[in-house]
Length: 106
Image (cartoon, rainbow, N blue to C red; front, top):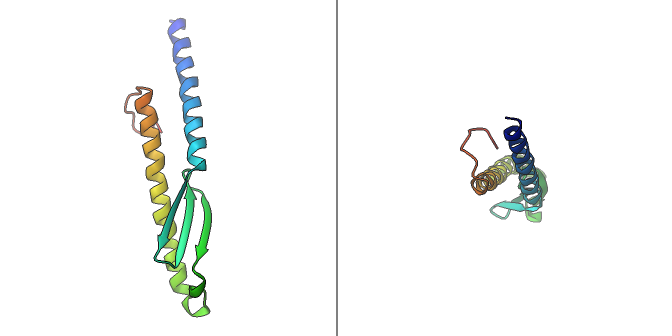
């Protein structure tokens, strides 16, 4: 029985290493979303904002509300794409490790 427990613990450690490597790789990947040529948001695969850029010709006091709305929309779109990329990487990892499909595992 203890032998099986040791095997399970080894497997858990291996899975943790693979997840850590996948998370590190996702942190270095960048996802860019551009709303027309007005706002560009760059996030990484860990859903952190890396950069926000505005088209210079759109930076006026008159369009502040429009820019705020575009920024929120663009960030949400970038984060959604980042989550998709993250989930795909975790699903790939689970497949490579032959892990059962357990909801909430990753």
